[in-house]
Image 1 (cartoon, rainbow, N blue to C red):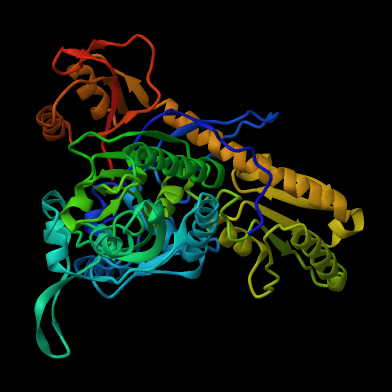
Image 2: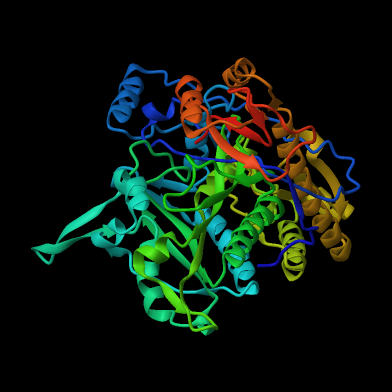
Length: 571
């Protein structure tokens, strides 16, 4: 995939966690969806004079007029189906985000043709447009993993139940989510099989056979797979019973190597979030209560969705020797001594696509960052009766070919059975970053209209030259500007909604306002539970980058705190 020239982000300066979850039925969804992550890496400023803000255009769903339509909608809700929206000017009626974020999110997933519900509760069918976003993530991460010495492999999705039972904290953490197969070939199985919730256990079973001595280390593998976790409340992309992900599994001779690997992998996730998804994230450490089951430490990137909930967008885990001891994964060191390996696992899933939707989308639908968009520029020829249609189509084809030759992902929508306005709205709903409008008068003048998705209306439209070289140059610059502006808008939103607090009362007030609370923390897991029980907020992370002026009194216990933590409601 051709990448736009974009400066890489190097330093995460705020560590925030993002968790996203999805509810399947429209009724449940009305409880509200969590926002994406808020992790920021310092990015060089471009000489942009744009305001870098994505305005919301209100496209309200019209109410059904007849009693029969109302009854049908009610029946759909009772069956757990999503009601059909009306068509408004060629665009599906997307619920305004400010009116109902959960309904808006589901409308965008449906009408943006990202996914649909599967026949089994909690599952989703990812449609081609949505899967193309997953492929963009795959291509970026796969390249980065291979550059850092990792190889792809595949492990079975059916895991003996006894494997899961070997690591006590692991089985305790995943027991409520396990899907278990007890029959096969018409017969009761001798041992139940767990459908892969994660692969640490089966990976260790194989590592214990493959690793014998220090020359076999490090062993660094990655797997692209699906996993099943039996969720009670599901939402497309954010939380589903089955989802796609990558999971890395590595074994090292020393604890220092394992710790460095866990940090490095989180850095790759930070780079993807900021450079590709245009999402600022906070990188940091999870508390013991929020860490992965069986891990010594868990690291996370947290994003802030536009409803200000947190989204855990990616995690890496230093597993220490816990799984190695459970599976007897050992090696002979250079002194001939047998030792347990030190291990790391890390993962990012289709939840990241939910983050892109929830961070950047507006009342008009999706807004896709150019680096991830399956189509970066859509060409809409505008034909009129009696005009030279061949000249218009010829000009569109020439410009589209020039853009494609320059590595820009292009598409032409010349469907004359639909009005230009219908086509504008359709591709706007799907989040295509740029649109070219070209009619007979434009051909005569040698100019065309370039419209930006992140700036609705006239503000986002400019006339640019149809000279091929000039056209390609202007489009490339516009794509870079859109990418940068989307990131800056998301960053500004997050920074406006993170509040520094010094007391429990301030934390409660901040969470009640729907914002993130950041304050000095030295509490226990029991103290965390108290906050969760009273505010529904969880400790998202302890940011890697800490402010000056520490230690300070803990916001809850009053004891000396050497670090700050971020609390927020999450998906």
